[in-house]
Amino acid sequence: MAAVVITATELAAEFKTDPKTVRRFLRADFRDRGLPTPGKGHQWRIERKTVAALRKRHAAWAVAEAKARAARLAAAAAEAKIVADALPVIEIDASDVTEVTALEIEA
Image (cartoon, rainbow, N blue to C red; front, side, top):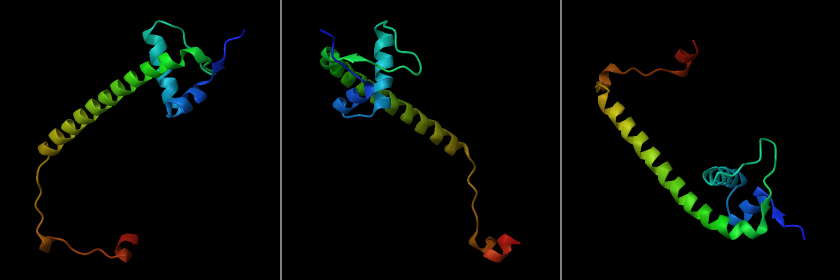
């Protein structure tokens, strides 16, 4: 009897996520386990019997990805604050500002 297979798109529907995220997970999962991945332009063919195990690994991977993303965002925010704090403060007196009309801008 032939094994029942599903595609990455079908797996994504089962995991309630998008196909791109499932393919990223599958590439990482297969790489971590030393398994070959389909080459560019080839489809994933996942045996139905492996879905339960994949679901558990996907949940752990999703948590790790979310933590890594949060860490990257926190680092970027800290870097932005350092840069912003290093900028000079320029005080402008309201009397120094003149109104520019649309006609002056077009000219």
